[in-house]
Image (cartoon, rainbow, N blue to C red):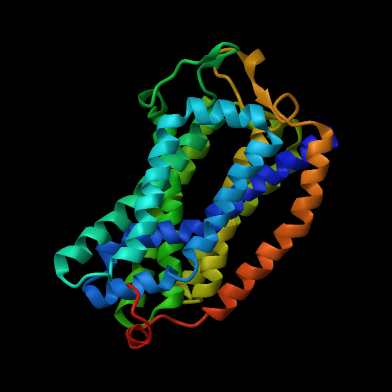
Length: 341
């Protein structure tokens, strides 16, 4: 049982790290038409995430792979019942990735506007749909032992939409703070101003989401049974307030780090509340998929733990090196150094 519990924690951690890393990429993509006044500024925005976005998506592949290998029943049920939103996310991410490669292949304003629009849509849809999907998992979905009987539109319930807006605002604030870190001049000032303004919207939606969670989910049961667990949402709240304080003092790196900690805290707020459930049924509690009844065999989990312990540090080391290598600011003067975007 300890292996199942360990992999439940790792499953949640991988999703949290994905939201932390790719979240600011998605946020920058959503902000592109609003903060990019001209082509030069839009190119700066592309360059700010260009060397990192595909490495960040490794965590999405890892989270999906862990779901498949460690919890095959969960993978089968999740990817069949949530097929429509997951396919929309997949297509959006494909279009988003292509936009990085194709934008500068031809000259002309119309061609670049096309791919700028693809980056925007390819960032907006995943940001919202990930929130909708996870909020519905927190809430519980309509299924029993025979299968899932909901629809795409049943996922768009008030709580699911609140989760979608929450994730969107988390990522957009995270992306605006990244731009404040990576750029200078007018773009940096407007990015910082956007982060400051959107922070208030994020705070309001976060409070609404916490209240709705009390009435529409069972997540608080674990917290009430073990009050020490409230430390996790308290850390998320403190990090959110810290992001605003650091932003006001123009400590942009610290503000971005605080925003990332907020995303980790929000994700683990749901993961901790779910345990041991991973895919709860709203209609038939006996049909819940848990870390115990959806897991692979102990031998498989043990082998995976050894493999993960070997290769995940390598991935972390690579990403640390990449972030260090591209730690400098992206400005208009650096655009002539490469032909991309």
